[in-house]
Image 1 (tube, helix red, strand yellow):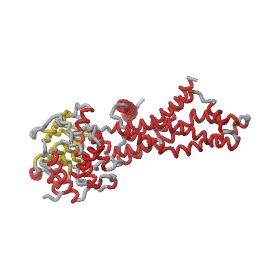
Image 2 (cartoon, each protein chain N blue to C red):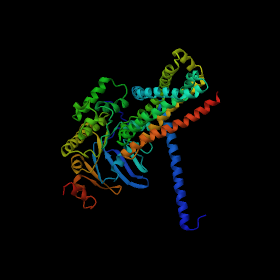
Image 3 (cartoon, rainbow over the protein chains, first blue to last red):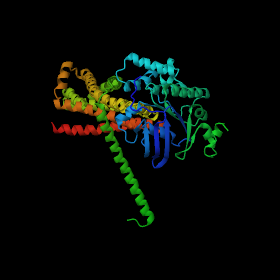
Image 4 (cartoon, rainbow over the protein chains, first blue to last red):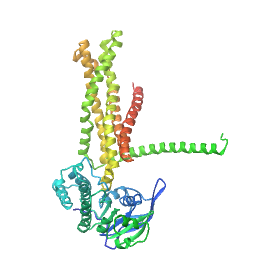
Length: 258
Length: 269
């Protein structure tokens, strides 16, 4: 599939670089100085309590929200000064898996997948579109749902189709917002496997927002915990797990890890 | 004059409150103009979504036909029936076709169509876009590098703007048919005589005025409902509010525009 490659990143280059990121809503500060790097091919898990600004962070990375202060560089582009045209091109290189899947409920699964493809890659023949749709449906193991409406799918299937919709554009970065929220344990395991498969097959760099420590352990190469609007602890799962911080310990206690 | 610090504080507080309401109003007006400017900027630039435009025209036009036909026919019959006693007092029932023609073509057809469309189409657009907004479907379009504003907003406004004159002409036809049925039953006037009398009082200015009103009403209904739906917040509560505001604001705007267009066309007569 055609890729709009503007800049090639080596494994040492951060595909996302954030410095001193601050964001407030109605005067209430949510992010108070986030510093982070996401490197090529890496899965970074971001843990944090509800309302701690995890989703805000990935919405700023995808350009859905603007930072109040600080630097945000995504695939070499300054998100604070990016033009609309450039942002559209950049967004086709970023996949965003929404917490509630956000499938277009007036379209079939196939139309959901075609929608971003035909608008980002012009002059595709009907056959090429069908081939691309079939391929991503095979990648997520849901070829049989092609003609179904989103309302006919289970929660896990919706998540997979949501991920497939991003994969159809061959993204370089994947942003997962609570990928296992509201799913049964078996489906959670399947989604975790899919996240790892996407990383290895598509060589994506990912940020995974979650409270689910099994998901964090299974999918993360590195973890960061947002506390009071900042990344308080970063490292491998074991390093974060060993924390004595009273604010971090409850995550592990609740998930029966200790 | 404030007598003590409490009164002073209350006064200052109410002034701040007033100011913030005024600020809110100006902010809303600014947002509406920004929304309209974005529509004119994006609507006529490629890529064009022809297929979606046809689908939306079908939704706005064909799916409103039954309701418009029934309403138009009933209004035509009732208006003719209610006008007869006043004219018969002067022995002028033969003027009925001219009277209903003027009333229907100049005002009733575009206004009636717009009110029905504001209720049926406006609420549907407001509810559809707001539910897409609160379920993050619009964000999903945005992050996939597509242009939801063009696909969802521009297309719907264009569809209502294009279909309203056609629906208005159709309403006029059906309402006149209703009027004819009533006149034929009571006065026995022939179809040919009726048609002659219907077209006699209608001037070119009337037709242009009626057409421009229909275009304006269509644009307004589309723009109001898209604005309400696209800017919806607060979850499912926001969906209800957006649908409601689409209808109420749409109808209110239609009446204001009706008065303005009538005043403006009055200068050309």
